[in-house]
Length: 169
Image (cartoon, rainbow, N blue to C red):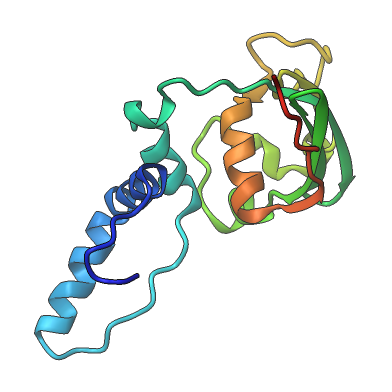
């Protein structure tokens, strides 16, 4: 970036959210650098990055998520996900293994490490893993908000079909 140029506001918000999510690790690396020690590359902390963005109220002003239309299990921890878009759909493939296996997803999502539970997924605006005993969407079900799922798809997923641009008069 050239000196004197400013970042677009949305990009600036994303960077600020990333810095906030990684503040402790960044400070630790700064201390190492100040002591002439080897500085390590920060490992991605996907859930922390999402949490920082989710807590950034200004990012969500005027945001309109249309939700998930369909989810298909592709094997292991991979899903194909259909998002509603303006007069179209957007399709991503997302491997959840970095989110569920490599990182600690928190106690609510730990049951999804069991592939026999993970494979029974559906889209109902949110991404839903029904109760494994009743197949109902009840207190034993697990769900992820569509904004969260889209966040991970856009950053770590594979775009299979982009939404068509639609001009609105």
